[in-house]
Image (spheres, helix red, strand yellow):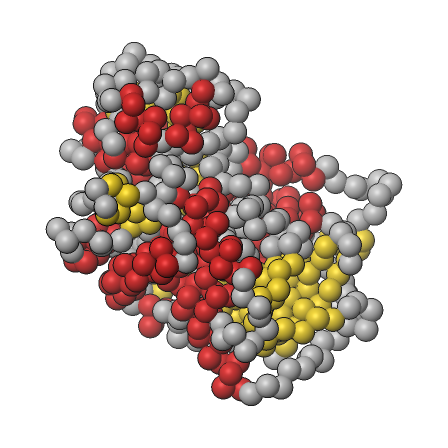
Length: 557
């Protein structure tokens, strides 16, 4: 990557003597399933502050439809779930991580039930679904196709009942504050109080993914990669940034939100057909509609190109309509708003950015390379997903790693004793202030829209070296005049974060000269053993570093 585009260490200027200070034992950034599970794992004797840039209903966890994968059927085996995860991951999963997470799944599902989560049942037991890449029925789900909403309802109620947890909603985290190489908390902003320095003995990053970098995405508006950018500026390592998973079936209707159509629809027997009504997946993969997401997304892209049509269609008309409407009530209602009957009509779909597989490098307890900083969930690269996430392993990862990060952070704080104090941070100077009326004021919405369109066109399901090189030059050009500026509200800070994360994603995709998992290089269609490695980036270090498996080696300084 070119010099001069990284931007300053802090996005804003601040003086410790001129902003309010707040002190907490553990600071959790993010209110999705990973963040709240982390907060609930902290010892009740410790104070926990949870900061979210929206309210608790704005996380990607709320939007999750499919469910949580776990071995709860006596006919299933842990080895089966492990094998399915490894097969989807394209050789980059860490087997020890996969094994430990899969074995913890039944306990985490049982914990959610104990906390009041009402999973769907049949014949007195959990109703289990099957999704692409899974060899068995093992997906627990709730409200048919609204698992995330029900899980988050129960977890939020549990968190709100914990006396040691404090919530700061509608608060934007501008930057992590570091001193002597360690994380000491964060500088945050909200409309009522402006900037605040939140001092924390340990900080847990659980800010979710980056789907909003793309024009077509299933993610909520807040999924703009902020956490990856925060960690990057603070000195953490990020890796596997080329791996963005595209969900194959996103509702594609003009004027409508790009709603995810859960994988469970295909698991229930739905077919993918082209504009003429011809089923096409069996010609691409023996698993047909139940092939892993990367396979299905590429097949759909090929069919769209071949038929010169903007989408393909999901067809459920051969299934029992009563069962379809019972099993997928949320999706049926969404389709109904656009005059479509999920059970009878062909539903227009196309791929959309769905899940960020790459992210902040963490160990088995969620520790990053920055002392005092932990991370969990979609913001991380834990070694679970490899080059392609297996369906319904995401909520599971958030629950497992959230719990581990919270417990590890809590143990470190308790071992240090009760002392809590601020550190000597000198006044931070940074850039120039972008003020209203300035002749050089930027149209931030235009840059954001241009970035999303560029990422969709040139860093999407299919990529080539020429497209990626052009995209990198364009984004770095934007960075040169956007990153040095100092903005005064979240619109500007979020754009700066998006540009930084996009730059890392494009550079990583350009460097990996092969096809693996969700990273499809049309000009490098083969998978190469030479690339059986992670690609890691750190601020201030030129270029990338290739780091082989296993994870223990990855986390060496």
